[in-house]
Image (cartoon, rainbow, N blue to C red; front, side, top):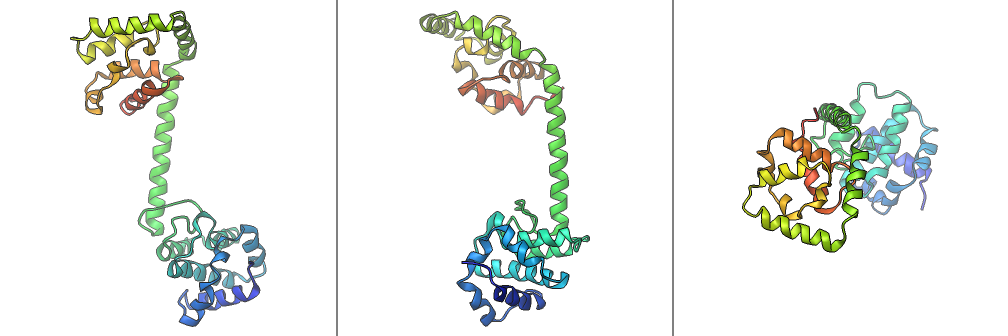
Amino acid sequence: MELTQNDIEKLITIGKNDGQFENSSLEYFISRDYINRLHGNTWREFMTKLTDEDLIFVFKALVRIEKELEWIGGSVAGAIWVYGVIQNRGLDRDYKIADFGLRNCDNPWVPFGGSYYGIRTIDEYFAYKSASAKEKEKRAIKYKKTLNRVKGRKERRATEIAELRKLSNEERGNIKKELLNKYQNVSNLEKLKLIANDQLYPPEYYPNEWISISIKEVEILPLQLIKQLYDKLSTKTKGEWKRFAKKLEKYDDGK
């Protein structure tokens, strides 16, 4: 199974009609869906021999045929490799060719090779990329601020874990039973404050039941308490404690 010069010629013919095709042209490609999953080097090798005009024709044909015949291609679809050559030649500075690919193909990876499931126009694509970049930058800034806030946390955590390991499993079990009994009538807020303010032991010292609270309950916790708890849980936690840290992270402003 390989790409042939005949395939290229037929694609060019279809592309000259802006990707429109007659049934006879389409029938030829029904049994040749494998060409849409060939290695990128194969497409690049053939495309280097084409004029700029024919290169664009091939792209448009692949876009139309993939949609019409519901070819499987995903992130390795032929149109992606061909569009890469188009970009390298500087043939789509206004992104009109890319817009053709977005509008006329259901494959979310066409034409840029990165998945995009939104409204398939070039304007919407760039709006999405801009919003994504801003959100990524926002998360990075927040993460950096959080790291600055928790300097020394790794060392403190190691010390707390060392203290916890001094207790046997039996001792830890008895302690948790005592805590559950002693604080059974205390509010969730007070229990969480107890965890946050403990300077000797890590959160795992306390009963898991104390963090079995809903998102709505997390939302109304004081911001300072959320920060304290998240700082304690942001380093090498597991299981229920790690999941609780994820809940807290959503409401930590990173300051």
